[in-house]
Image 1: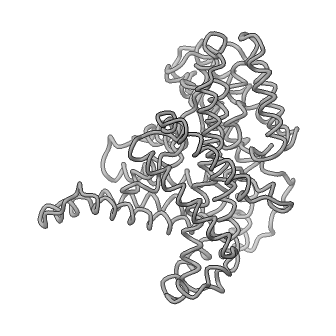
Image 2: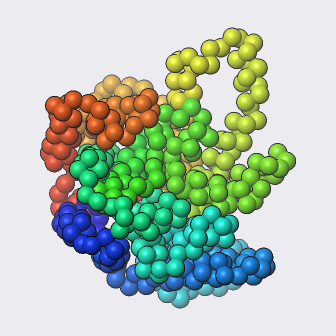
Image 3: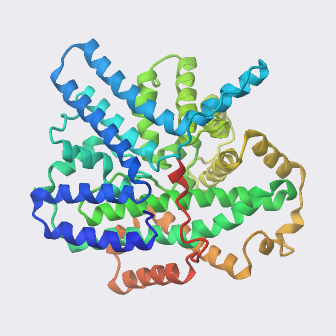
Length: 494
């Protein structure tokens, strides 16, 4: 069930209304049933996968709390990870592994292995698998007590607002809130309107900006070998903005829906394109995933408390795995590796940059300096996004090579903009949407407030003016129609 489908617009109000009418002690049961119904809207059979992951990690948590032996506890964690990651590999990476085995086999002149079965990638499997495994590690480390109620734990794994594309919640946050539902969750007007505001802003980003950009980006990347530098630059920058608006919009709708129900989910994006370096970018981009890899992979590998070479090795492994998590393709791995190399280069060059700034009295706290840092960081992330979007590493390299060698500066001024997938009217709507995005992100960057908190401080007329503009702009300028109403969020494929 897509967040921007008619089914969800009927599902969510009904679930919310019944939720607040039910006695507190049974509300989590209603949410559990609603969450499984929500997920089964794609394929009812894949609900068995969530149930399997839930059962394995639930039993692991109970066993970890009862068993004290170090070896036995490590064995329990190993079994939990082996079974869950094995399921993930089977459904998400089997074709990728088989293709690479056959590629090696062709070099050795062996017969290719036929694919024994065909499966569709279950929506959200990477997200709920990591959330469940995070619970196992939290119990192992003693950061949370094992959940005794299997149905409450099942809701933690399957909570519908963030089930299929995050945020990847931590047990210390969401599970703790689920345990206190009967005592704390009551209807609160300010909280509900704040959640609906976040959802509205998320729908605006998805329907007005992301899906509109997607039309242009898809055309340029599909025929990149026919274009020169200007449309290719527009396509690369467009995809960078598309994937941000698309994924951030899902997170906003998820956080807003959970807030309406009385739950606080972790923030997943914090103005990433205002970042002043790549490390800062990863503090702001897909926060729930980057902190998951930090806490459950990078730190266990040794983190930063080791030699320089070992630290860089840990960083490289973490980002290569992060790239592979996003998809079964070497281009995703390359994207992760590029970001690791960016950070290694930053660490190696920082002493020289500091000496240069000191020698030439550069005002590092000035607006111009930080603006330059943000532009450089954005440029580097755009280059990396080309590998993320392209069909292969070779296609990404060709794409970047054509930008560098097929210069056509006149295309910026001769009206070519309007033949790359959007006419003049559509382009103007997009520019309006991007301007609104910049304003909201700038407020977020300067004041540290989400849109709902910012509007709550404003005069009533201003608050309603902004909300009505967003509502009517989404209804009027959203990308609708027979061919586009079911455009999925990009991160559903991961």
